Length: 373
Ligand SMILES: C[S@@+](CC[C@H](N)C(=O)[O-])C[C@H]1O[C@@H](n2cnc3c(N)ncnc32)[C@H](O)[C@@H]1O
Image (tube, rainbow, N blue to C red; front, side, top):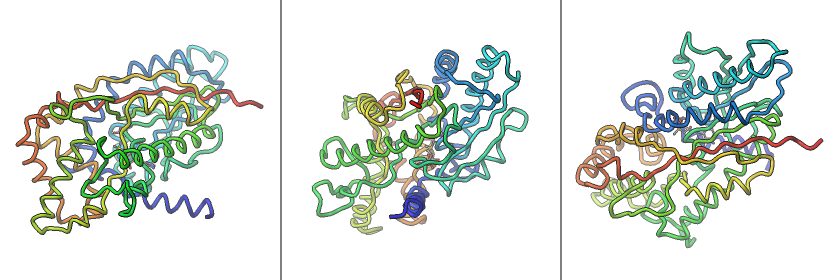
């Protein structure tokens, strides 16, 4: 298939991944403090890595920075500010012969259906000293010119797959995910199909960035992950909460005749959350154009506690999953589904306590190796 046509089709599939638009009560803007918690912890590490590891020549005093999967910007702006301030400091320190104030271009990327209007209208008016540019499209493919990017950033976005693994949706395959909306570690075939798709997708992401980044440029990835071992009797993770609680609410609705079970069998959420060793292995094999400079597990306790109430947790899940759910099941079921989800949480001492949430966030910092000429 023609590469251009392929890209458009992939854009259509991932278009459903956009977070809830606007700034209303169900929006991503109002319900993404869980994710923001990780950035607050990453700040000092990002500053240190830029100060010590960034290794680029900027003959014209220009820096390109991109946020891949920026959503409506609320969590992206503080991240861009941290990166630009650190780049500025480094530039002033080292590049004495170059213009004192370099120019910064920030490329905000997300899927084509993302609410970029909200992003632009909420750009901090007096607090951003960069040119803001929108780059809509699937970040698994090339989006920017060759060697134009000095810093690549992506937070809470790489878990989204390009598609539901085909075997998972195929009723004749041993990996058919009947009655569930996501993988569990117990269903080996399903789990492996998801993991394999994740590996391929990260590979494509790294390949595209390898072309776009300048030699010596840095990439910071904030990746949701789960520990290799945790106790499902007393602990949980976000994917397990989604599958078990949101999934069983849908099943309850099917049992009550509100929808068919086939409707649930044909719905699978297209994301995967790796363990730290899985991510490390995938990054190592993904592309030999990068070195891994640092991989650290961030303590996101503060972020988790921002969704410590039933209402906050349901709103956080709704802001992330509503489009996908509404596209498949119809928007008329959404209020009821999340009411049921809240009832389910209220009845569960394990899921009610944010300290039992064992989801982790990995900060991976990579450097673009020098190209061989
Ligand atoms: C959970 S949000 C994270 C937003 C923000 N980075 C943050 O940290 O809060 C994930 C974002 O990734 C975007 N996304 C998912 N797959 C994508 C793809 N293939 N290309 C571009 N953006 C994608 C979604 O549309 C969504 O806005």
